[in-house]
Length: 184
Image (cartoon, rainbow, N blue to C red; front, side, top):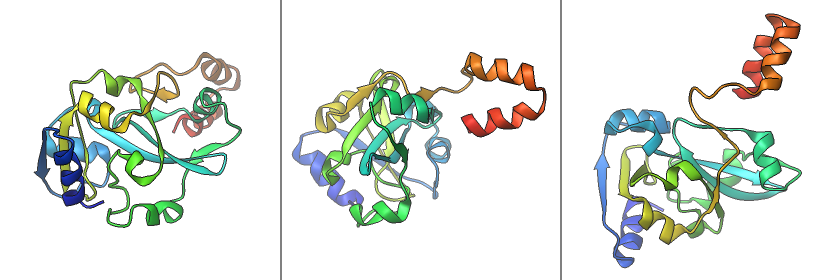
């Protein structure tokens, strides 16, 4: 969905928005830097695979997925990052990695991290690495109607789970690499 189609969809819904053009941003954190807003107000769109079916996960740019926790919350045996080649055809007019968080327009269930719902406004890639759309969060929620999740994510600076810290103390420095691998 190129930016023009997204704008038409929002115009039909009578939604106010602002579109900005900026230097190429290939990550949500880069996007936040270019448009000069906090990373927790920028949406990171992640395509996931749940038991063989694709879905969209939207969360603050600065947050990370806790895969094991997400799997428990979604009551699924398998949740993983989807392969870009497996889903790029679903977003024919979007640059890979710049999909807008409107999975409902692409036949995908959308899961949204609860902290995004508490923001007054959101910014996100609008189908290209050089265009960002800003809109009110309530409008986004009304149009997308995502399933809101209050767990399954790590926010920046969050303490590591106690079991990881306990393992690190028991196994010394070698365990630090294991901790990074699990969380990163």
